[in-house]
Length: 335
Image (cartoon, rainbow, N blue to C red; front, top):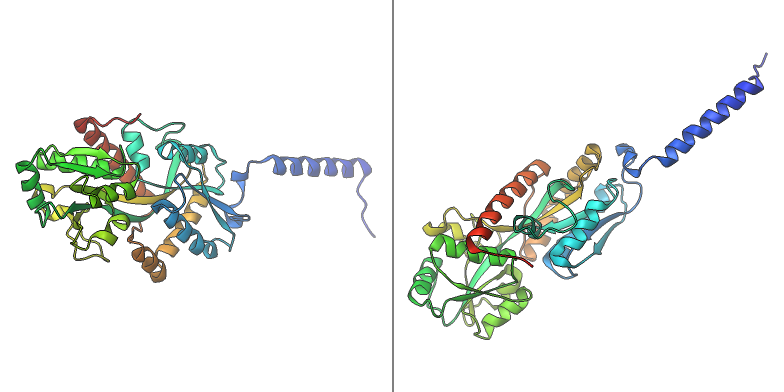
């Protein structure tokens, strides 16, 4: 004998079902089950123009990350302006659902340390997911500078203060901060000449407009043959795996405590659920462990920097302290 629900009871069940459906539809995207993440395309925002270091790394990551995240498409979105503040603040305000991420470099901590962050707080509105890669600043000189290493460069600038100036990629750039660090550790006063980008800074050296260049490895390397420019060191604690012939800055006793490597890392909005953040972190770790991905980065002068969220958080804290001190001592201001 079959059973039949009372009409009033059936109506109540229908009303409850409709209510639950409405609640489910109204729930924020961040409430999506981590087991089902991701179910749609993911966007990685890069706050700098296409073709630069952050953009290059973002596109390499996007090409390799999809297969570790349910084969969902990963789109790179360049949102430029205000020294990275526009794109970074966009992600800080985005839904915390794991579908909008930020790939930035340590310009984000330099901005914060020099009080130039606009529209967000790097420690409150964003959460670190993973470090990805690093590339120290390249320190080069023109043929007119009789220095074969950093110690000799220090001797040269101390003996020729009227000739001592250096080009950087811009005011407040990582290259500027390394130049400021050089002055502070060596007790020199090399004059800073900022350019609008790393390529123009190298061009200034090639044109003998400045004798010393603090730039990126990709920009300086093609010209560092010894005829026009020489690369004396990189601003890291140890030598690069793909350029073992170039000394690390810390090998010179004056700079033994100096390690100002440019890093690139992935962030998510601060309230992104822990389970989804871990899902992304695990997927990124799988990409970084791939020898093929490492080769792709090395071929473009970047070192894999496979450190997860907690190590990344510590790096941010360290940066804020170091860059704040450097900025104050060198009286660096961003406007």
